[in-house]
Length: 205
Image (tube, rainbow, N blue to C red; front, top):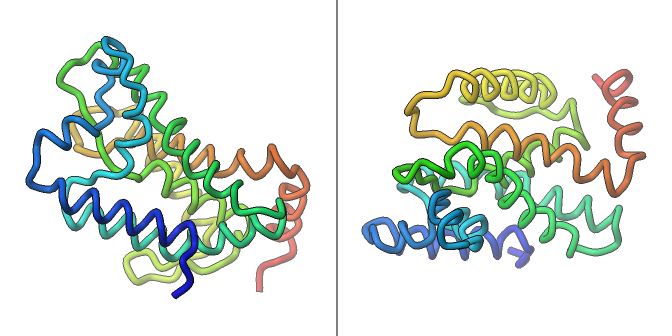
């Protein structure tokens, strides 16, 4: 197994998450806690919150998804941008930017905290959809075109984000992570958008 950036992120995330499962203080110290960011300028939480998870199921879902999509995006960035540093920048920015709407919405809510890499993982998945919109994705073991999954996923997250309520899931991070995953490659290489449109119209087999 090659030690890609994705694999390194997965290993680090698993170590920090697993050792934090029964350590409430560490989770509090690392979580995205908007009121603490506002009151004590603890901006590091935008990054550290992506390395802790609520339980094994939460961790496994994010890390398996990152495993299947991360190496592909890492290789694509290497081919396009001639360096893997773009992928590391991409992942770090996805962690930060996907949590900014959460911070704005909950900065005055002392009791609100959120953890997990879902925002960054969503960015990776949607970058993959941008590169290969007709690739097959297994959704609950049902094969589905990536572009269809993306449309359903965005529709669901937008609905749940607007609906609000205590779901235990940070839908805002999912939504804005997905948006970032589309925008980042297009900003650095707009021709990717033309490739996407060409595949969308002619790439289905």
